[in-house]
Length: 158
Image 1 (cartoon, helix red, strand yellow):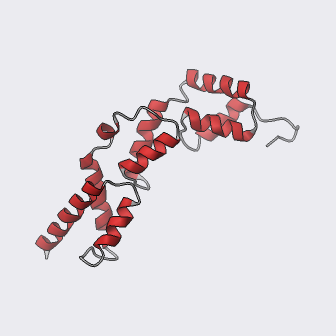
Image 2: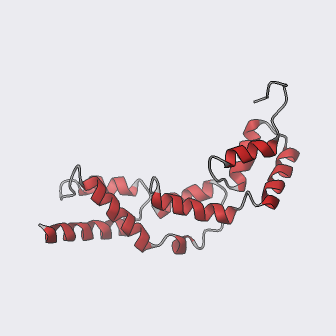
Image 3: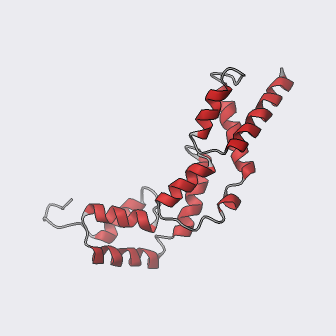
């Protein structure tokens, strides 16, 4: 999109404006600049500048995305892995350390508690709850463990 003078906006200013809304990986920023119509050499220079200034950092982006997915619009590790891969993050060897089974089970338990206020978890709707959690990328084993614990806790409280 060209400005009122018929020129493309400054790519660095445009990139900083995008980063004001959410963090981005190098790949995400490259794609955004391509979509905006900047030439390859301009994109390369812009990415290099943002990296030098510390505004782009794929390692930091990865950690921030994982933390965001644990708190807001929560997702399981499988979903987070796909999202990171789509953003060009290849180093995922530490994902299980940054997002543990215990954390995933805790988040599932919190979702079960929240969702259970309107439709309590029982034998009839276990499958529905399971699918809802699986679609968010939570692991089968963690879903089963959290559902069993939730049902045991609920029976104890009754």
